[in-house]
Image (cartoon, rainbow, N blue to C red; front, top):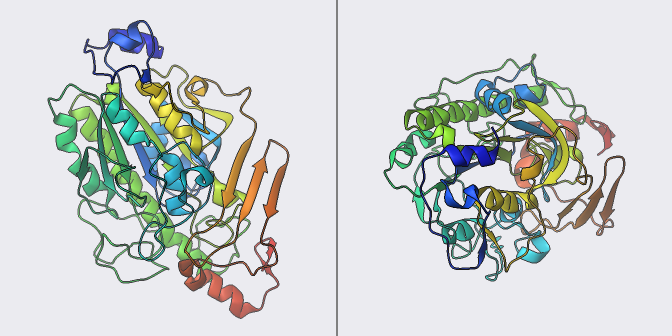
Amino acid sequence: MTRRDFVRNCAAGVSFLSTTSLATRQGPDAQSKRPNIILIVADDHGRGDLGCYGNSVVKTPNLDALASEGVRFTNAFCTTASCSASRSVILSGLYNHFNGQYGHQHDYHHFSSFNTVRSLPVLLSHGGYRTIRIGKYHVAPEEVYQFDATLRGNERNAVQMADACRELFASQDTRPFFLYFCTSDPHRGGGKATDLPHQPDRFGNREQGYPGVNEVKYDPKEVVVPDYLPDGPECRAELAQYCQAVSRIDQGIGRLVGHLKEAGQYDNTVLIYISDNGIAFPGAKTTVYEPGLNLPCIVRTPWQQNKGIATDAMINWADLTPTILDLAGATPRDYQFHGRSFASELEREHAEGWDTTYASHTFHEITMYYPMRVVRERRFKLIWNIAHGLDYPFASDLWESATWQATIRSGARYYGKRTV
């Protein structure tokens, strides 16, 4: 079944579109029920840490099932491996130098986007969608990234977050919805939504667990240690904690899908799973190396014909807003993005014309100025370290991590395969 067949067979329901500023699809697509869209954003989840991406240890059955019904991208990249900066690109379709958000939004860092940005939730709202968010937000200002409603939930408990969405799914409102579902897992530390103190090695895990979650604990001896990390007891212990947080997300995805099916919404819902940036280990997050940029991306649509495929299309997070607007039939005529829709690639394993991506990094925390620019193709990657004369600044939680502190104490010249 194609998307055109899907919408033709759906119950008729003409949705409101705002004047002539939106370019909508012609024919049945423009006159039939449009899909709900859920964008799930994990916090610091690396591409190699899901079963469907080849990790034989970490347990992610629900994400694996989602991939088996849709498409898995092997060359999906964030444009900057830093929380707020990456999320601003996800929600705007614009690179940071154009949207204005170079670093963290919260506390004294206080980075924010320009008020001229027209964000994804605002454009979808103008296009007749209900826009709802739950969990981590981490962008500014709110008037730019404005949602119609905010649901409350513990960002470390994706199961509880999913339960908080149940009323939304059962609503009698006939308008389609866009749900922005963002966990704080598997980020280091406690997080504002928990009662945990600052513990960079814990990844949000706590002894008593979380309501509704069957905590999956991992043996440090069995975890998969990536090539760029030191294979020592400290790193293995941290990776075991990290994998536990990943499995917590997976259970939340399973609960979310269950509630969609219960409400009869699953067969009219697009689900997209990504991470904002790579894992919170040195050599990944806040760098422009592959572990920081190359991330999981799973897209499941109700009309997918070639289920369970992997595509080699080289996409990045600037493409997400144009893609979602395309799927929603709400692309604006009078506004341009740096990204482009990859909706046409969802049925193809081998892409044409998707062979280049760009990335940058300028700040993470306000004290971490270290600008880098990247052009990456299939065979080659160019990294320009603009401030190469400066010492590389570490994020505070990465610096405090047991993995990094053990490396410093060892006096080793090399960290993984890189010079310290």
